[in-house]
Image (tube, rainbow, N blue to C red; front, side, top):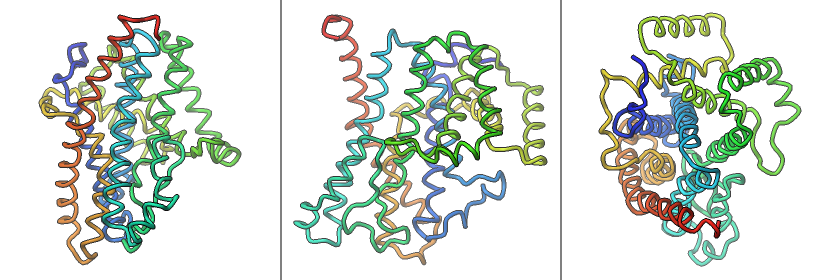
Amino acid sequence: MKIQESNLLRGSNNFDFVRVLAAILVLVGHSPALFKNKPFYYDPLIKIIGYPAHAIGLYIFFIISGFLITKSWESKKNTFEFIVSRILRIFPALLFTLICTTFILGPLLTSYHLSDYLTSKETYKHLLNITLFRIYYELPGVFGSNPYNNAVNGSIWSLSYEFTCYLLLILFGYFHFLKNKWFSLSIYVLAVILISFYKSEIELSYPTIPFLGINMDKMIEFFILFFSGSFFYLFRNYLTFNWITYSFIISLIIITRVFQIPFIFNSIIFSFLIFSLVFSRRINLNKFGKYGDFSYGIYLFAFPIQQIIAQFFTTEFNLLLLILISTLFTFIASFICWNLVEKPTLKLKKRILNLKINNPKYF
């Protein structure tokens, strides 16, 4: 099977399902730590493929994001449209989450007196997470006695890395690197090879990017995953899902396991497996997003909802039951976020872009 342009249309692929699957993997992967204070202890994926569930969920998000954001870059008429689209996709729902946790969850669950909570500087620092690059996980007196204590939303740290990948894509697109895909692929492969040899030295010399607070180890990891998805989009017309390519991928999996190939070379394997599911004709889940795209809302709300449940249920409760309860309430929160914030924001984006077209002198 080859990817056709019609397969890229919404409702013609399994992107919505795979993104929700990624968000659920993050939720499930966090559960042992949040409910039992035993990270990875109950995670079978570590034993099967060597990576925890929440990491696999993040890898899927970055690979898919690389594919779809590159598609978005090519389809937009200019940089302004692209930036507006990205800002309105990330920040409104994030701000909604921060307001909910700071002014609803916090006052209800804090061990502080309400007036002390509302006058504390630490309370309002949590709102600074809207900047993405300086993360404040705590709220005064909230979740202090939980198995994984104090952290209100431990999932939002990855958003700064994703937004950085967007900025890099703008940079590469602005200098027309993406137009010459073979040249860009050559540079990417060379960069991956160099990183594989000098990764430890890079991390030692530049552990974090100044001001942004971005960890170089994670940035390298997510950069490779994001642009792996990006190149899968650029070379989509060359992709064929058949027994030959599947045999090749199986061979790569065996080689990486036997010879313990570094993670950065596994991005092609992850990407191929993900896109074979996204564009599968046998697994038809293209109506999964009929009522909305809930993946981002699930990602944003899962952690605080799990923490709420962890506060009221002891560690003696069955982990599977706690996961099911948290999944249910997370879906409800993401449904509200989609209809109250994300869906109206999409309409706002169209209005802003139409305004620019009709009144270009103001932009």
